[in-house]
Figure 1: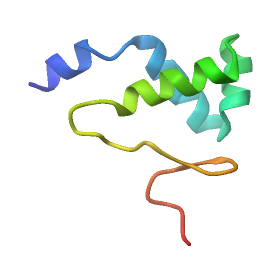
Figure 2: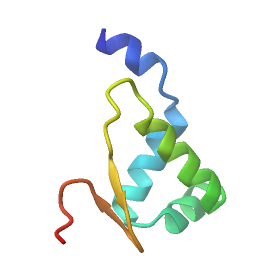
Figure 3: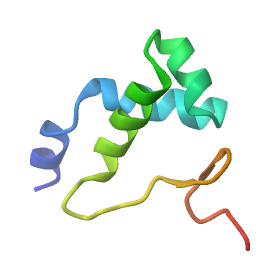
Figure 4: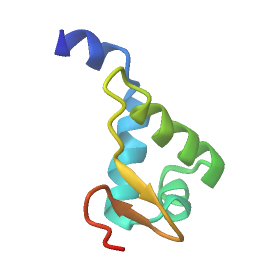
Amino acid sequence: MEHRLLDRISLEAFRVFDAASRHMDFSRAGRELNITRAAGRRRGKNLELTPQDVRLFQRVRTIIPAGTCRG
């Protein structure tokens, strides 16, 4: 079952997730990947639209890994 889920997620979405998590910013991730900020956000959001609805980031003024935001 996990294998089927991974087949539906694009490699580009994983690249955006990797860059955004390293930079903690979709704009910087977009610059690294030569895509717009909006495209990076869309691709990152597509990763979260799995049947499990796992949130990877909490979207605030800057991105923060889910579960680490206090407030």
